[in-house]
Length: 250
Image (cartoon, rainbow, N blue to C red; front, side, top):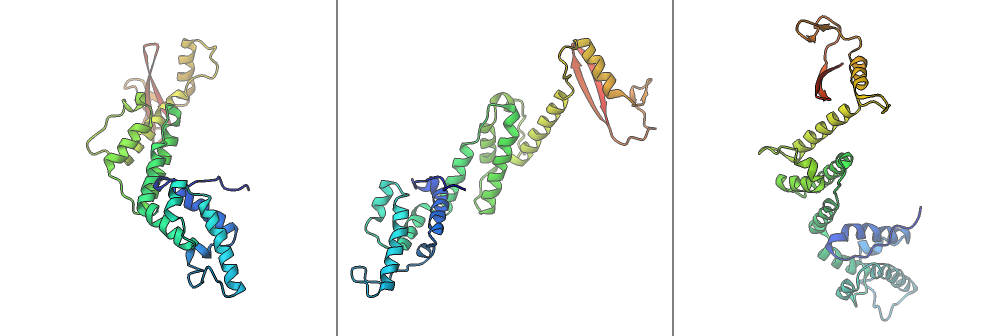
């Protein structure tokens, strides 16, 4: 497995990614203790008194260099002259980390979600739902109207214009509505013949023959015979060449 992608801290918007990256780098050096506690606070930096103190200063410097190489020049100016890696990390976390950083990160993720393809809609909405759940698990709340705004902005306008928004709709209810709609559409499209050489009339005959086989109908009422062994059927009406076709699906 290769090195993690090199990430430069630019501010709050990418702090979470940067912090995950820098921790991995420091863990690889087996020096995580230097950002978890101040290991050199008791040392006279200009005049260390033992080889042990010298070693602590060297390892702290290694972590400090690792941090400095992964922050922007503007942010570097904020911590210039600070020797302790622990104190540097504390300053950076205090200014760019915390809930503010979490929110900024997830908003960036949400803004990156969009598609112009109908067959990609559910992939986008599943990722959006995962982000909202992650935010909630971290006690980061977002109003329902804001969630719906992200949903509307992420999927094709040609599709979203068909969805009727009700006053009591939530992101979850719209998610379920869209998922059901796309499943039905995909299901109906699945009836199309694989052999495009069959003409339209043969195509209609094929669909009716193939999917009404073994069904028992009452010809007088055109209803499914309640005396057979099936408990549930779905009824789909399809219009092909201006002809109404009712498909009964077990």
